[in-house]
Length: 173
Image (tube, rainbow, N blue to C red; front, side, top):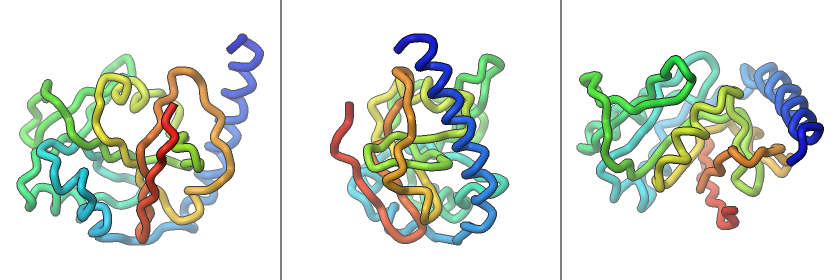
């Protein structure tokens, strides 16, 4: 990808983020995420990396409590100075083992599993280091056929979950 193309992709992504953030406050829907918890990937997982939601992100409070109740090792991300992520256990210890599932926020997911995040690249770096099953939580309307432009470092997700459905992506490249 040449420098002009990279700049154009970055510009388009920035415009999409601005639009999706403005729309997000009208999309808030609560969920207990039981359909996500029932997936084979999560039911068989020992270690699940998730996030603590804030602002207008899909709420993970009930989901995280249920993961702990099910006996999963639940990890949360902690951002480093270089904007990379490391995973911590509930007692604050850095986790260095294998992760089975990563649950992450997203602003938008396209039909190919391309994820539009907040723009720092933190999850892309963390996902590049794991073979975990990847699922992004979004609101209805944030999972669509509108293509998310992507760069070589961008990591795809295996699935996206809204409050009511889980969509799996088969084409990973």
